[in-house]
Amino acid sequence: MLPPISFVGGGNMATAMIAGLSRLVLRPELAVAEPDPAKRATFTAQGVVATAENTQAVAAGKIIVLAVKPQSAATALPEIAAAWDSSKLLVSILAGTPTAKLEAALPSGARVVRAMPNTPLAIGQGMVGICPGKHAGSHELGLAEALFAPCGKVLRVADESRMDAITAVSGSGPAYFFRFAEALVDAAMALGFTRDEAILLIGQTGAGSWDYLQRSGFDAARLRQQVTSPGGTTAAALNVIDASAFTDLWVRALAAAEARGRELAKG
Ligand SMILES: NC(=O)c1ccc[n+]([C@@H]2O[C@H](COP(=O)([O-])OP(=O)(O)OC[C@H]3O[C@@H](n4cnc5c(N)ncnc54)[C@H](OP(=O)(O)O)[C@@H]3O)[C@@H](O)[C@H]2O)c1
Image 1: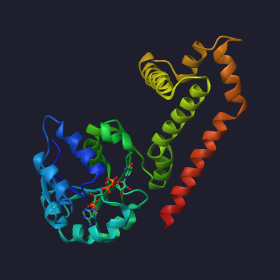
Image 2: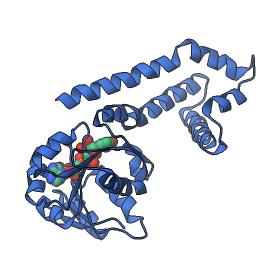
Image 3: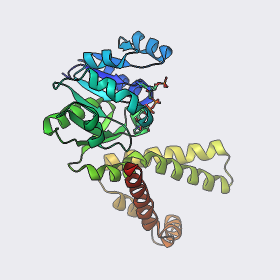
Image 4: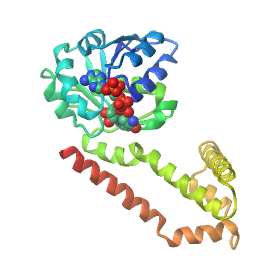
């Protein structure tokens, strides 16, 4: 069973993680520090200890999840440090904030894991990349994995510099799928379907195809070939797609996201 978990910041991501953890048969003790009284009341109604004091929440937890916006971290971190002891682990979900910066704000030797989740975490289907700080190892990564497991899947990376790539692939990734869905809906409407019809056709085709890919045991290329007869309709569409250097487009897009992540991390 997970040790007591305290969230500093009770916004969208903390709410989603608490919902995931609350589905566990052996639910860990949960606390949250959050300035908004309305949000605190919602947590209290779920049996989560809610306080306005970061120090109080930190004192109650063994895993401390830093879930404020990056711009609020400068206020929250000294309060976390004030209630810190070496038995605690900080798991930070702050986008683009290196572990060295978090460690520098805490007592020396503090154990820190950095995580990069994505928005499908809100429905328990998140993808989370995690990496250890200087004083964290496989035990701490295991705790972080167990923390996120109720909300999605987890990939460990050993080298923190890979977190910009994680951000580029899965952190920003939902937006790529949404953009693709938007383009396909527009294309279906150009063939004369109403918006609702296009959303139904594309939404069900997308969901069904992804499920089929996951369950069939075949890779995407094999399944694509299965629906592509030489000289047929699918081949006609794929000829247009392939002529646009489709893979290269995504290689460039993800490289741009990774490069931007590196720039932002430098501050
Ligand atoms: N959303 C995503 O897709 C995503 C993905 C990856 C990583 N992240 C990271 O996740 C973190 C949280 O994102 P979010 O979408 O959950 O943000 P959010 O909804 O704004 O939640 C942050 C919460 O922290 C509270 N807060 C502000 N200052 C505080 C302080 N000093 N001490 C304690 N609580 C404080 C805020 O309260 P008030 O609103 O009352 O000020 C708010 O409820 C961010 O750092 C973001 O980079 C988000």
